[in-house]
Image (cartoon, rainbow, N blue to C red; front, top):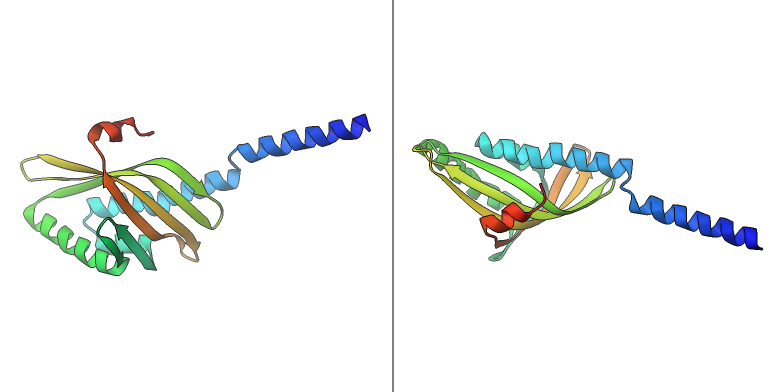
Length: 165
């Protein structure tokens, strides 16, 4: 009886320890999400390429902001106009992401953190803004896509600097 109890205890400890460690599949999902979503968004902002940005979103995606909700297709039209204006003015743009939470498996993900979005005008003056966000993602036949982007409150540069890199 004592041996059975010990084996069960050891099995339980090993199972709990394995659950606490990130799985190889989850690590691979995070790497794929970084490449297919966050790096793709950053490149599309730098390139003023709204079509490339649009590929990151599921066609039924929703943007949630403090003003309400809107289909991502409508937000992309607005952001595309902003990109055209910025390019015409000679402005450059950039975006960077930092995460406070990343939960993913082979087909779904929830990520939270903040992004720094900024423009650099012709004179080289940078105007950054910092916003908390959350995103829900799904893996489709074409890769990872965002189904919901929730933009929360603005944060300060100091709060941004305190986030994990």
